[in-house]
Image 1 (spheres, rainbow, N blue to C red):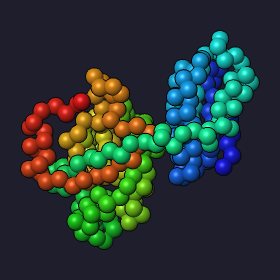
Image 2: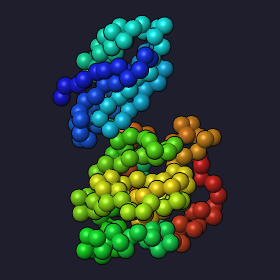
Image 3: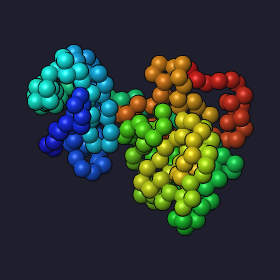
Length: 233
């Protein structure tokens, strides 16, 4: 897979591996992101991975003009295949209480696909998901890998407030709302985990490149978990 590089601003450039979302592009994005972060290249201010691209913010006083910066960073891109495999992402298990008051859209998702609510839960919790990128809200992870049987359009009318920890589906993706925000995803469950905490380092529980698995839990288990205190750690 080749790539394109172009200036985003006077102090930022973007490396794009594909115009589409794919596992191959995602792997390239994560490999380059980890390589640049591990090497701590002088002059780089921030590295922002997305679905199929990486944007690098840099100090022109250190890296020079776009031509100079793109040359130096381009050398990293060309050599990234030599990045150590030990830089692979983590696997994070997220417990979820599906349905009921925690998953108000579960019946609609089941009806949309002509299957039972239990089958929706089984399919969703059996999947293995990749964190493609963090966006929309602090700590909100876009997860790829949703089974095609569960691909469901967003709600026609978004909710003004989706509770923190809500697990949703939107088209071919799933995700967890780390904060209470407006949103239009189909809500099928809720997790007691804190996905974003300003006092935690890093604040976001999930990072681009991580692998996520969902584990069903009962309402009793959910309430016991929440009653045991703040899990922002």
